[in-house]
Image 1 (cartoon, rainbow, N blue to C red):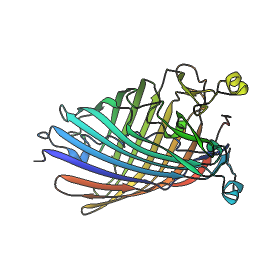
Image 2 (image 1 turned 135 degrees about the vertical axis):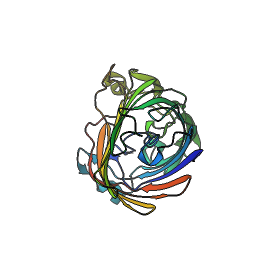
Image 3 (image 1 turned 180 degrees about the vertical axis):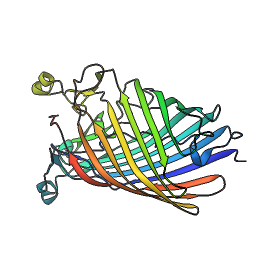
Length: 331
């Protein structure tokens, strides 16, 4: 019987989420993949541990106001370019076929190049690297998966801890000979500074041994309103930024939903689905002040999985269909 199940997810972010005001950014931070502990393919009353290593790379360089792309930014060469890589290492402890516990530790490597953040002296890059916000969660299948292998729903409840730096700093060019140390942009910070509550639903329904449907829902509520990190890049915030509250960074909620179909062929599983990532304008709990970039991306999400005896390798490549920058914030 399997003792450890190692799942490697290569989630290559070909989708790009873009905003106005030279702010290209990812819609939401990595959610650590999705929990499959105790799922149909993993029904095993002896195994106690599962290790999941999920990788996500994302590049953004296009800008939107609502659903309208600001194509002149690329023509003029003034677009912001973000490169973001996340390695999520999640360890699951299976208490029994229904219940499991999880700890997820993300490691992030980000870079952001722009002109406007460096007094338009040229294109320069800021970076951030380190551990992000660690998440703890407990999961339970509604029905014992051993007794109900055809369809089931899994509920998860967790706590996201503010372990990632939310005021990571790098140098910004002020003049040709002067640099100033200040917090990097919100989109490349390692954490958001909030203690969040996470809720998850994971479900599957197999209509035959070869074809089945899946769904995942993830929501993180961040009660903290702002984290106090300045958006002035080491300088003094403008009077207008102070007045409208965008002089400090917000601690926003985030949401992700997935729905699709799997087709099995031997050790291979081919997936076709839809993915929605959203950073809401208003938080579910607490205030919504401070600087944030709300919006959503709806993507087609093809994927492929290859199952070995103790290892599952899978890759999903979302391709953006709809991008909407739902609110504009200056800063």
